[in-house]
Length: 150
Image (cartoon, rainbow, N blue to C red; front, side):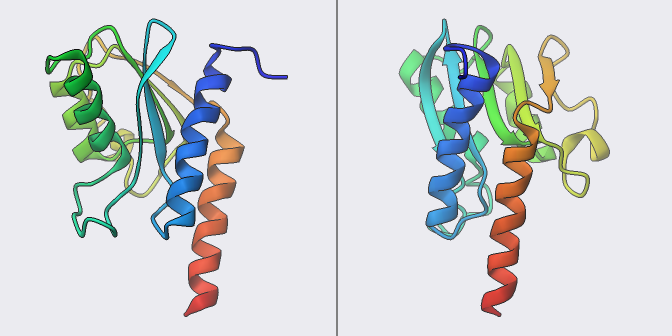
């Protein structure tokens, strides 16, 4: 059983969002933004639906959380995201001054740690590998299903 309000618990909620993306034919990345152990924003990739290459889960969640809080800074918040953020998203997270980023699977091809390891705000804490296998398996299933449809 997953302990409530643990990293695994919140990453499980991000995985729920990633599964929604999968069902919608989007690359299955999901995230939640948490403040004081409360989810204040949920999002998943919408790049296909919106025909917008910037409609990543993290970008959607930053906007939703900032709108809810009434300000552009998310210093007291944590973001749980199923895949390591790309450079674009890491830059946006830096501007939002997010308190902590927790991600599941690494992204060796497009992740910020490969291309811009200092992209996040210097005060942002980072934790990786939370429910990593679940996140990676969902991504693998998605791309296998795409290849099989070709």
